[in-house]
Picture 1 (tube, helix red, strand yellow):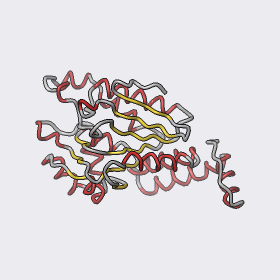
Picture 2 (tube, rainbow, N blue to C red):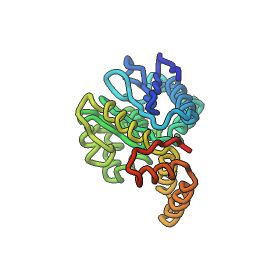
Picture 3 (cartoon, rainbow, N blue to C red):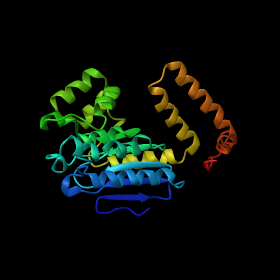
Picture 4 (cartoon, rainbow, N blue to C red):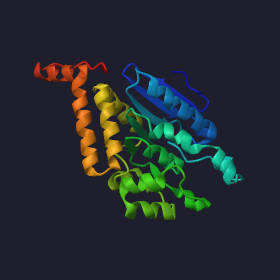
Length: 260
């Protein structure tokens, strides 16, 4: 898939893994409107690409993403900010049906931290710096942190981060539940791609239904979530991948999943 290589690169490998790179290293990958637009369009295309089974998002240069581009917003009023339709661009990631892994190095601040929280899995380097420092410039999170951060780490860890704007390390993020795995500096992308390749070898329909049910049930009563899980579980017995997977297990061979 061709990328807008001035601000974003998208590489799709024959393993079924796509790696999306934010490519504004001179601006520390700050999320301006053109980048947000291209990123949303790219994820919509990846959603429809049957060759893509798992996606990794990472940043080029010294950091993951340093946040929103303040130069774009500093003189704007509420009407201009509303007209940017930022939530519409975020929605392409929030509703992305395939597994998404964030490989976080350097800084992931403000919108960059919110971008990482849109992923299903966060691989963070030990020395990375994460946070929601919006309060330090007179605003507040606007890309979901007041909701996603609270759900990820709980009120009494999220509130200090948002109210002080203080940053945490990658190691601290892992310890408080804001990351899936903490790895040595310089290795987040390597670990993220390796995990994405493992996921891509799994049956795509089962993987997508697992993500769909887990997210849908997170905000539902337990009984509703359990019912959604059971119906999806039963549905998978109508797939060729289920037959292939179980026969391969019984025959002690490696299954070949086709997404059917």
